[in-house]
Length: 118
Image (cartoon, rainbow, N blue to C red; front, side, top):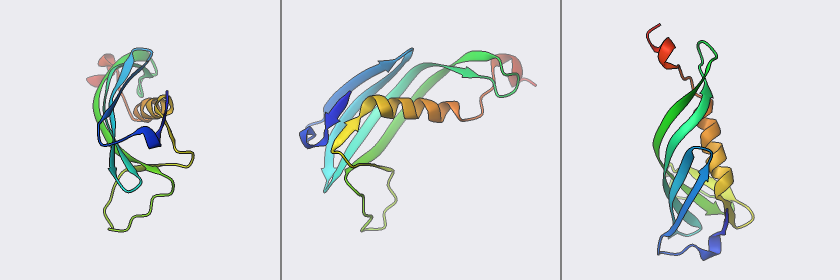
């Protein structure tokens, strides 16, 4: 699902997308300048491989996600650290963001129930 950043205003623009057994639900809202706030919840199950025994298992995910999307190059004027994703085509691709968040979770170290006590 792609959304034109120009359509995001002060009134929150809700979204709800799914990929497999995981849901990405939240809103986009104009913040200031070229920044759009994305605030969402990522929840459900992700198929993952145990980092210890290499067996596949389902990991329960329940995470709050919050970052900004810049319409164009982000320039930090006030020296405030922000999580910012830059969009150079004035679009936000929520499916791509969801897949990126899932891959970020998968890249971490996870152990299955059988290996937790080892």
